[in-house]
Length: 579
Image (cartoon, rainbow, N blue to C red; front, side):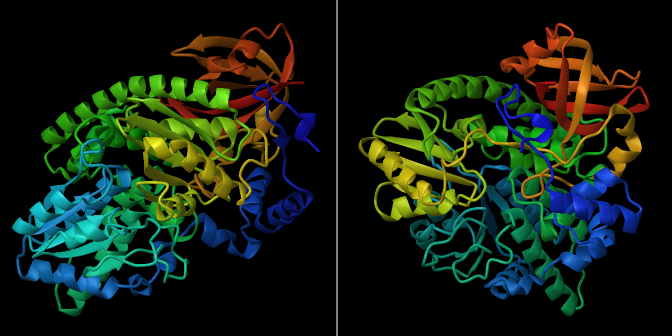
């Protein structure tokens, strides 16, 4: 049964509330712990047993961090890195051009620098070189270095790693591996086929972190002191959220502690980027995923690929500010390019139909740096796995995003093995591919078939899942602070949403580029202010601004808004339905 009777909201979604069992568990938890009932509802929905609530609300990294050596090849990798320091070798770091690659590279650059070694950074150009190691780059690096460390890439790069003659190579990655691994010193990857999958949710920066933790263990065993690894958790947190890794288990603790480290403003690059992006409060997972992450990614998307890693590893505040300004400018340019591709991809996909197991679009000259973002928007719109491809000459480069329960990376890899793709790979929720123009239709048809067998395309528009109802008077700063202790929220641990039933629109106006600022009251004199971003891109903004006295059920996330030293609760409005 639809929650509050909302079968089709203004955004076309059905509202789904907590089940009977979740309600029962939440009530019992509230009685046993004395915690606020809405917070207990969130914990019950997340599956937290009542006896584990204290530990969940205050996760300790020391309790959750796995033994690094539970990962295959870890001992070989950490031994080789320490040996490189001891022998003062020439080390190169080959990194992917996204946030995960940039943070992974920055952590290694920082670690080597603190031990007196200056490593070389190499980030391939997205357009000229594409994703991952390539033969010419690896051969060139091998001629001038003793060790090449590939981060957030390399697991499938058999040929390029073989081309690095004369140098040792290791891979620290998390992308899905094939049946065979490249011939190198070590491949540390929780998504190797011979791993048990217990750490499959780690991003590459977390794999790098565990590797450096094991290096620290080796240094201590030798009576030496290594760098402070806790200080690097800001990088791990940023990568975990930006790479949409699920916030479960150790990931949650890594992000929680990393946000504390970031709030200390000790890393010049992140300080400069936060200031440019006007982050004027302690950072949250929202800031990592939607404010800082896109700016770091902008360099790899439409600018110089190494800008993000250079910013994150920068130690000079003046240089950091210059790099942050450049990335902020590139991010603005990226938005313009993205909007043009997004609009064209949406039009094409809608014409093809949004009810197939796979929603896809391909266009001439679409910038390869923004096709992934367009695919993400298309996935959100259709609740289907989505692929967007930019065609250039005889081939196209594309990026895909998946929905929960559908492993896109494995299907893309199968297509590559079958010869329908020039190359392709990734992980469950995101993947990249290169396809020949004359194979495009056949490849997409085959991919659609593979995804259909996993259940893609069964549902309609995504349901809006709610944790319960609140009245404006119950939405207090104290409640928000309590709910924050159940976070951070993100992939694998969705943030709580609440419905406010039978609200009267008090004030509504359009602000900025299509956003809606609005206030609601319950008819009893208590009100709550709300903001709905992009509300005028759909029916939400027009319906609420031209309400004609109608009352609405409204839904979204509650958050603390700080303005001129005053803290109040604001609703980040996501949906509404006429009451």
